Image (tube, rainbow, N blue to C red):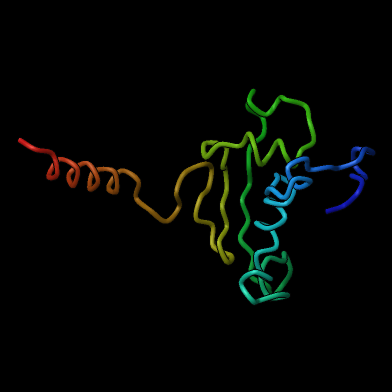
Amino acid sequence: MRDHDAAYGRPVTDRLDQFGLLGAQTALGMATNASVALGRPGLLGQIAPGRRADLVVIDRSGAHHLRGGHPVPDLVMHSRGSDVRTVVVNGTVVVDGARHATVDEHATRADAEQALAALRPG
Protein backbone atom coordinates (compact mmCIF):
# COMPACT_ATOMS: atom_id res chain seq x y z
CA MET A 1 0.00 0.00 0.00
CA ARG A 2 1.33 3.44 -0.87
CA ASP A 3 1.96 5.95 1.91
CA HIS A 4 0.54 8.87 -0.07
CA ASP A 5 -1.93 9.23 -2.87
CA ALA A 6 -0.36 11.54 -5.44
CA ALA A 7 -3.69 12.44 -7.01
CA TYR A 8 -5.16 13.64 -3.72
CA GLY A 9 -1.97 14.76 -1.96
CA ARG A 10 -2.95 13.18 1.33
CA PRO A 11 -1.93 10.07 3.22
CA VAL A 12 -3.66 6.87 2.23
CA THR A 13 -4.42 4.82 5.29
CA ASP A 14 -6.67 1.87 5.46
CA ARG A 15 -7.73 1.90 9.11
CA LEU A 16 -8.87 -1.70 9.05
CA ASP A 17 -5.44 -2.83 7.81
CA GLN A 18 -3.89 -1.29 10.94
CA PHE A 19 -5.79 -3.83 13.02
CA GLY A 20 -4.99 -6.84 10.88
CA LEU A 21 -8.37 -6.74 9.11
CA LEU A 22 -8.93 -6.60 5.39
CA GLY A 23 -9.58 -2.99 4.40
CA ALA A 24 -10.79 -1.49 1.12
CA GLN A 25 -7.32 -0.60 -0.22
CA THR A 26 -6.06 -4.13 0.43
CA ALA A 27 -9.22 -5.76 -0.96
CA LEU A 28 -8.99 -3.79 -4.21
CA GLY A 29 -5.28 -4.55 -4.46
CA MET A 30 -5.96 -8.25 -4.06
CA ALA A 31 -8.72 -8.16 -6.67
CA THR A 32 -6.58 -6.31 -9.20
CA ASN A 33 -3.42 -8.36 -8.61
CA ALA A 34 -4.96 -11.81 -8.44
CA SER A 35 -2.38 -13.26 -10.84
CA VAL A 36 0.10 -13.70 -7.99
CA ALA A 37 -2.44 -15.55 -5.86
CA LEU A 38 -3.30 -17.74 -8.84
CA GLY A 39 0.36 -18.60 -9.41
CA ARG A 40 0.45 -16.81 -12.78
CA PRO A 41 2.39 -13.59 -12.07
CA GLY A 42 3.06 -11.51 -15.16
CA LEU A 43 0.54 -13.34 -17.35
CA LEU A 44 -2.77 -12.22 -15.92
CA GLY A 45 -4.18 -8.87 -14.90
CA GLN A 46 -2.26 -6.57 -17.22
CA ILE A 47 -3.80 -4.45 -19.94
CA ALA A 48 -1.23 -5.13 -22.65
CA PRO A 49 -0.95 -7.12 -25.90
CA GLY A 50 -0.60 -10.84 -25.21
CA ARG A 51 -1.81 -10.56 -21.61
CA ARG A 52 -5.09 -11.78 -20.16
CA ALA A 53 -7.12 -9.29 -18.19
CA ASP A 54 -10.67 -8.99 -16.97
CA LEU A 55 -11.98 -5.45 -16.87
CA VAL A 56 -15.01 -4.01 -15.11
CA VAL A 57 -16.32 -0.51 -15.81
CA ILE A 58 -18.26 0.97 -12.89
CA ASP A 59 -20.61 3.95 -13.26
CA ARG A 60 -19.90 6.22 -10.27
CA SER A 61 -22.49 8.88 -11.18
CA GLY A 62 -25.13 7.62 -8.72
CA ALA A 63 -25.97 9.58 -5.58
CA HIS A 64 -24.58 6.75 -3.41
CA HIS A 65 -21.09 7.63 -4.75
CA LEU A 66 -21.26 11.26 -3.57
CA ARG A 67 -19.67 10.63 -0.20
CA GLY A 68 -16.59 12.59 -1.27
CA GLY A 69 -13.86 10.50 0.30
CA HIS A 70 -10.95 8.71 -1.28
CA PRO A 71 -11.98 6.96 -4.55
CA VAL A 72 -10.64 3.50 -3.64
CA PRO A 73 -12.64 2.92 -0.45
CA ASP A 74 -15.61 4.69 -2.04
CA LEU A 75 -15.50 2.31 -5.02
CA VAL A 76 -15.09 -0.78 -2.84
CA MET A 77 -17.62 0.16 -0.17
CA HIS A 78 -20.37 1.90 -2.16
CA SER A 79 -20.52 0.25 -5.59
CA ARG A 80 -23.52 -1.91 -6.37
CA GLY A 81 -24.06 -4.58 -8.98
CA SER A 82 -26.35 -2.14 -10.79
CA ASP A 83 -23.36 0.21 -11.23
CA VAL A 84 -21.59 -2.25 -13.54
CA ARG A 85 -21.75 -1.00 -17.13
CA THR A 86 -19.17 -3.11 -18.98
CA VAL A 87 -17.34 -6.36 -18.23
CA VAL A 88 -14.61 -7.78 -20.44
CA VAL A 89 -13.35 -11.29 -19.69
CA ASN A 90 -10.19 -12.41 -21.48
CA GLY A 91 -10.91 -10.01 -24.35
CA THR A 92 -14.61 -10.88 -24.71
CA VAL A 93 -17.27 -8.33 -23.78
CA VAL A 94 -19.75 -10.20 -21.59
CA VAL A 95 -21.66 -7.18 -20.23
CA ASP A 96 -22.29 -4.15 -22.41
CA GLY A 97 -24.39 -1.19 -21.37
CA ALA A 98 -25.35 -3.00 -18.14
CA ARG A 99 -26.86 -5.88 -20.16
CA HIS A 100 -25.47 -9.39 -20.57
CA ALA A 101 -24.00 -9.70 -24.05
CA THR A 102 -23.65 -13.50 -24.05
CA VAL A 103 -26.82 -14.59 -22.25
CA ASP A 104 -30.47 -14.28 -23.28
CA GLU A 105 -31.71 -12.71 -20.04
CA HIS A 106 -35.41 -13.17 -20.86
CA ALA A 107 -35.02 -16.88 -21.66
CA THR A 108 -32.87 -17.42 -18.57
CA ARG A 109 -35.44 -15.68 -16.37
CA ALA A 110 -38.27 -17.73 -17.91
CA ASP A 111 -36.31 -20.94 -17.25
CA ALA A 112 -35.67 -19.89 -13.64
CA GLU A 113 -39.32 -19.02 -13.05
CA GLN A 114 -40.38 -22.39 -14.45
CA ALA A 115 -37.87 -24.21 -12.22
CA LEU A 116 -39.07 -22.29 -9.16
CA ALA A 117 -42.70 -23.02 -9.96
CA ALA A 118 -41.89 -26.74 -10.10
CA LEU A 119 -40.38 -26.53 -6.60
CA ARG A 120 -43.32 -24.76 -4.99
CA PRO A 121 -45.76 -26.94 -3.07
CA GLY A 122 -49.33 -27.23 -4.27
